[in-house]
Length: 277
Image 1 (cartoon, one colour):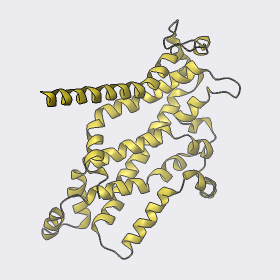
Image 2 (spheres, rainbow, N blue to C red):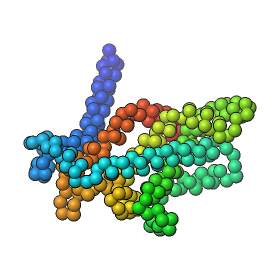
Image 3 (cartoon, rainbow, N blue to C red):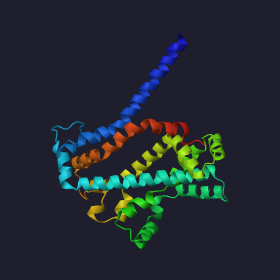
Image 4 (cartoon, rainbow, N blue to C red):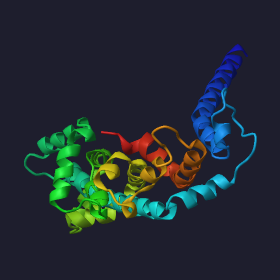
């Protein structure tokens, strides 16, 4: 009986901690949602209040009329889809090569690729800008999409997953006369759905939220993405927090909905196989 009571107390304590953690995680989003319905004066109150004294639903329409939100949305979706499709294809091809093929210097090349993960992107921003300028890609979709269609992290993630798959499948396919590409396309990819979804979510989040790269590489209104468009509500001397938060809510909702539908594959890919070696 004592043992059962102790077990029950531990479970209650665990659930209390999980609930407290969930509240802490969701509070920033609730604050953003609440502020999006406030007036500017309400958002500047000291001490701050969670709920607005008056609900200003027109903040959302003001965002749409103040900036070209539809164009920014379309640009962001196009860039995100291009990068995600590129990473799923190129990273999976590279990962299959590192996991299953034998060629001279494979381990050395893989270690050199992993070393890229230790270099902050800001360090190579200036040489990257020079390269993009020489290619005449500045202020085009090329500069927003093509440099992001491959990543060392995506290759590492999928390579670790591919190494957990049974080698018997590959050997049986070779006996049946399958080429390396057919083994990759018909066997490895269908078995890697959870890892591919995990990589897709990571890529979508990184691309959707990226600010520095499009800010430096683009200059025209037509090439702006959501992160830059929303940042225009933040001025040098004052910030229109209700409009800023309303724009952030509209920009965040698609990512939340996407994660809700794909969370099962995401958790499976990371918790079970995504980082195994």
